[in-house]
Image 1 (cartoon, rainbow, N blue to C red):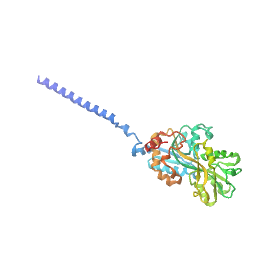
Image 2 (spheres, rainbow, N blue to C red):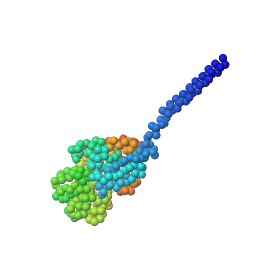
Image 3 (cartoon, one colour):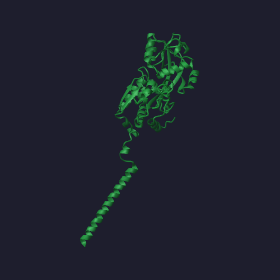
Image 4 (tube, one colour):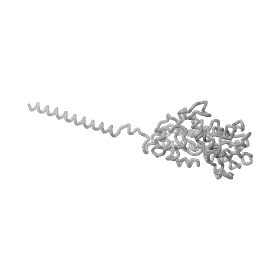
Length: 348
């Protein structure tokens, strides 16, 4: 009888022990679900100081522009910023705005510079993009600094107004570049077309070199201030910046909302005697929809947290302000960039 009671007691003890273990395991499982512990919480790469993990090992190609433009040094600095965070990053010299929009739309790079009006044209598929169609894959990252339209001629050449360019050899920018697109619109505002001038589709550096050699009468440059090519030209020749009157810019603004009136201050280039009225347009950073939210968030955050490096690489970058980063965007904002600006309290 005692043996039977001992056996029964042992069975009851084992049963109670198993029940206690199961209850403990159930509690742990429930606690894991409620607190979000485990791999899911560790997978987030874009929180706090760990955001840079999203860039480690990532291939990031930055599309910039010609060597004498502002995009070129800024692109090189951005590549260095991303490299320091572990990315395999490089800056690629291109024909700038329009070419960059097309390349990004095709997913052949991760981020690039563009003039706002050119990127807007690309996204909508209008004007110079009408034949190839809307570049609907591009997305905005941030608005940066102002581009100033600089139509440069040699003092004493007789070129003082837009109308004076009739019959002259004018470097209008690389084919389908943002500068060339804007040049065409400026001439139209003055009732002119390329038929009224001798248009040469040259890059900034080629146009400036042509002026030095006497092969070009004027060069059209849209860039931040100062432009390296114009700066160099002004050291050897007296230059003038051909004015674009404010009323003409306001007239163009009706069709191209990204345009606005501004001035090239007289102290920017040697030999300028007065401020020159001209046309301004914002430069933007663009990407494409298939770049991950984490990577775009990290690229955007890294850019603004290291803005001093960009500002040290070119004076134009001193105008970059995170509070103005959502102004006049040409395409939908990428969700990764939106996350960063939401965190910073920046709204349109």
